[in-house]
Each structure stands twice: as structure tokens, then as C-alpha cells.
Length: 372
Ligand SMILES: Cc1cc2nc3c(=O)[nH]c(=O)nc-3n(C[C@H](O)[C@H](O)[C@H](O)COP(=O)(O)OP(=O)(O)OC[C@H]3O[C@@H](n4cnc5c(N)ncnc54)[C@H](O)[C@@H]3O)c2cc1C
Image 1 (cartoon, rainbow, N blue to C red):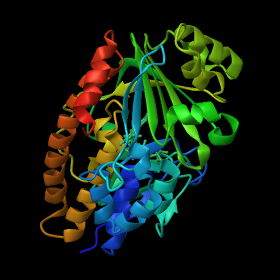
Image 2: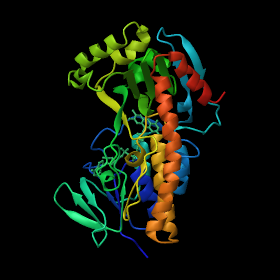
Image 3: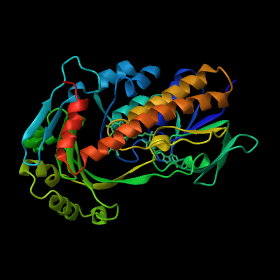
Image 4: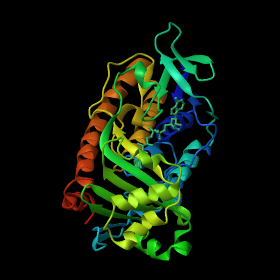
């Protein structure tokens, strides 16, 4: 029997879900608020882990194409102290494919492939159990009913209230993102500092991380602990004003490190939020959540990976067709919650150590997770 299934959100979770269902010949409606795939900048680079994001791509039949698009050399990682001294310099072995990097835009296009996304369809509310299924209300006033609505609509999910009262809380850490273009030609010194992968510098309650994307693009994240409303001046449109606030926050750090901020163009403030570590809900027939909508956690390299695996696993179970749809979803939720809780604990503790009072903790964390 073919169920009417909709997924809200065309991010890593929603697209992985839809693509695996599509592979199994199961129809699915993808509802996305953005007006098109290029409506906003796609964001930085993602490392996809062998047992998580890469496993999801395998389930979608896309692993070989991912391997051709991804950058194994992007696994390189260098750690400096604020004085600019190199403390660690990890380079991947040529055959190492554990966590290769891929630009988010490339990943999105890979997952999109033949999918028919309904762009510009912002969802405002989901109402379960209407008698004819789950009702979806859209910002333009339209509405439609499905047997299953999958909320893959990220941190500020509009589907989540249908199953849970939880809302994300501020973690105490804010990132400010900026970027450099054409870095090899325009800033060769910074290109060498960043190398093929990432460079990270940790001080007291501060961090500065730069990651190479493809095409000579580098994303820089200034990270610091502060009350959520302390640095609202960073929301100013004036890049010079934002830059000078950031340079004062990182006062005394080595000049080449600060050049990552000096040469940054536009700045975007991102206060980091998270859901409770073990976020679960009482199962509601006809609705579920995936990815950040279900388990938003600090961005320590797991969120997109988990989102994709959630999507791929639920799609496989639904396509499998054994048992009632509701029982399939219920069993999936139990598996997702257990996995997400483990990663949420790890990333929550990790953020405390990375951006905290003792920078040697950040180094110790990398020593634990980097391959020797
Ligand atoms: C700075 C930073 C760096 C990160 N680095 C990594 C990393 O290296 N590795 C990693 O694994 N993770 C990383 N993450 C986490 C990762 O970005 C997220 O976990 C991941 O994007 C979650 O995917 P998702 O599909 O659940 O949600 P999202 O990516 O947020 O996608 C949600 C989609 O839903 C759409 N949407 C939202 N609301 C509605 C609505 N009402 N109606 C219709 N559509 C809607 C949005 O437009 C979007 O397309 C990072 C996060 C940040 C902030």
C-alpha cells in the first residue's frame, strides 16, 4: 500500500529521507520554505563520517558519487595557540576516507538529483489526527493532508510543536561566521595557515576556526562564550564595525591569526542553541521528526551526519513495507533517540571543553578524537 508521505524541509535530513524513498520507488512530497535551491548561501563544508553520513549516502546509492566529489585532503587539521605556535598538525594518509569533506552546496545538489521539491512552501503548523490524516498548513493559506508528515525543518521546526513542547536553549557560546574568497591568490599566507583542511586556535573562552571549502573559499568561525544578548552590535550590517568588535574580543592574538578576521567580508552572528540532551516525546500517529528538529546539538561535526542517517533509515523502514506505518515510525523513533542522546552528550561536553576557561582541554579533546 502506498502512503501519502510529506517531508518538511529540504536540508540534509529531508533530502536523505526523500532520496532513499525515491530510490525504492516510493512517492514523497518534499515541502521547502526557501524559494529555490540557491535562495541563500549554502553554508560551509561538512565532514561525512563512514558510519553516519556516508552510510546514509550508501543507502541512497550515492556513495561513489560522493567519493568523487569529496575532499579527503580536507581531513587535515592544525591546532595553534593564540601566539601562533603550531601545537598539532595532522595530515590524512592518502587512503584515509573516514571523514572526507564536502561543500554543503555540492551535497545538497547530490541529494536533490531527480527529486521534485515544492519550493516556497513554508509550513506554519501541523495538526495530527484530523480523521483523514495529518493536516499541514502553509504560510500562503493553503492546506493539505498526509498519512505521515516528517518534520525535517531544522532548529526552529514548525512541525515539532505537534509532538513536543521542547524548544532550543542557548548554549552560552556564539559563533560569528565570515569568509574569504580566492584565498590562494589573494591571501597566500592565510592559505598556507589553513592548509588543505582546517586550522583551529583556542584561548580562554575563545576559539577561531578556519575551514577550507572548494574553489579557494575559506569559512572562518570566531567562537566565544557570552550572554546571548551581549554582542548584538555584531548584527550590524556594517562589516567594519563588526570586524573591530571581533578584533577587540581576540585582542593580543597573533597577527596572522587575526588576519582571518581582518580579511573576512560579510559577518553573520550565530548564537548556538540546543535541545535537551535526551529529547524524546510520546509518539503521535502521523507525525515524526528528524535531524535538528528532533535533536539539535552543538555543531561538533555530527548534526548533518545524524540528520542524513535518520532520514535514510526511516525511509528504508517505510519502503520495506513490513508492519503498519505507525509501528514502523515508532520503532524508528526509539533507535533515533538512543543514537542522538549519545551524540548530544558527546557534543555538549565537547563544546564545554573547546570553548572554555582552559584551552588545554580543547587540545586534549582533539588528541582523543584525531587518528594518531
Ligand atoms: C556553524 C555550523 C557548523 C556545522 N558543521 C557541521 C559539520 O561539520 N558536520 C555536521 O555533521 N554538522 C555540522 N553542523 C550541523 C548541521 O548543519 C545540522 O545538524 C544539519 O544541517 C541539520 O540538518 P537538518 O536537515 O536536520 O536541518 P537543516 O539543515 O536546518 O534544514 C532544514 C530545512 O528546512 C527548511 N525549513 C525550515 N523551516 C521550514 C518551514 N517552516 N517550512 C518548510 N521548510 C522549512 C529550511 O529552509 C532548511 O532547508 C554545523 C552547524 C553549524 C551551525
